[in-house]
Length: 362
Ligand code: SAH
Image (cartoon, rainbow, N blue to C red):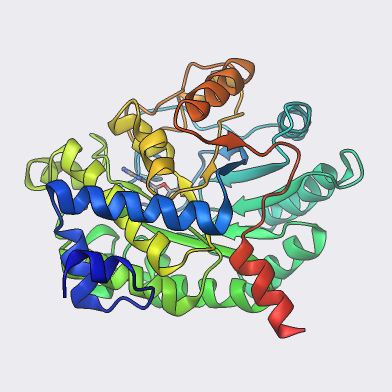
């Protein structure tokens, strides 16, 4: 089968996915062109925005790749006040972003979970519930996920990080706090509760193979998720995986591999939402635009007050740490217009895949 034949299938098997992951030169360009074509046919040239609020870098976990892991003493821990969160959300509304994403280090104590319930309800009060709310707050119990859903959150992002259990334990400690099965169960619970559920992986991790990456894509398809976020792994000096920084693909290779992952997934799941992660832009100044041009359709501009941003460094040299939100907006409009896309303002921007799934169930 030729590359062109493979590119016109939606039910790709593992071998076909691996062929596409290995594509170079002209073949890679064909993959990217086809992915863009599929996206435009199904979703048009719109990009949805989520105003990102990095609520807190206090974390009880110590994932081996993440700069905000609890065992890193090298920066100040913060938690935004209720007022700061509401002000960020109001700004998202004023800027026409249509929705916000609340992300944080992982805590599951009641003080934290109650606080989130309160904040979700407060954000919902802005202009009578006009903002969509995505949460990205790690593993929680079913009751907590349910409470947040009932409070008004309707989307949840929980990356599986690596769908191969063996690889998972190479990038996380193997203990009760970092249990692969628990993370999987959380994704299933979110799906069951009716969240627009998003997952994803880092690309270019130490020990990660093309087989792993192909299986990750098949995992997303099998779970029938509504959203996927994939970005290049970026080694952080204060983490255990820093030690392997010379054993991973170069930054340019990790970027290219991420773009291939996005493009292939767009062929496999034409109607899901896919985010052009900030990590792309960190590795390549045009990284987000490149991701949009090969199939991604969501961008998460950062709304965290500037004084806190430099303490939410899950990876080093994060892009846009110094930008002001209004600068960010003009910058995005211009950058996206340059690649033939436009921002869809004042909409929640739910995934078409999810909307259709709900309709089918009725
Ligand atoms: N605590 C939340 C949010 C984590 S931060 C949760 O567990 O879901 C969001 C994402 O950043 C993570 O899911 C991870 O995939 C990514 N990330 C963390 N460290 C990274 C690194 N060093 N390089 C690239 N991406 C990273």
